[in-house]
Image (cartoon, rainbow, N blue to C red; front, side):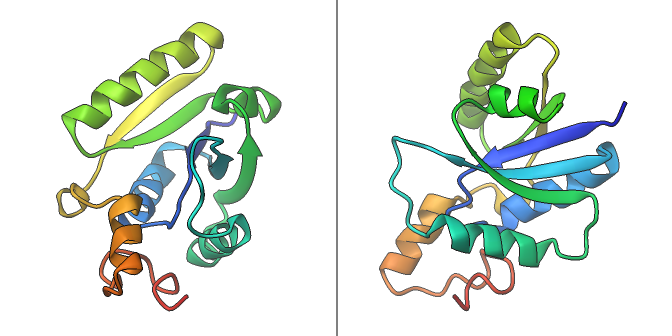
Length: 153
């Protein structure tokens, strides 16, 4: 059986922190599906099509990475696609508490799914998509915080 992980998120925009987690997960899994989830509580800053395009460009030379989109529960996406691992990146203790709760609820709903946490690289501990969006809104330069190609757009 293939070890398939999903790395769900809004990626609005994708950051160097996201990219780092995804690349570091590659040796652990046979395939990593980066899945942009629709969140009814959030209004997206960048269009879905642009986020998909960025992710496809960033990982174009990585055959173990697929880019997809979904709406609804991540565990339902996992069941539809025979995914047994949910990959999450952790920056802070608060991230851990939040993600632990979600991971435990996912485990109750679908016992065969495991949540795997990777600590972010120290240089990305304070980086988030919302901070990057704020920098963009205020005319700042985000080149050091996002993968090549994202800042140019």
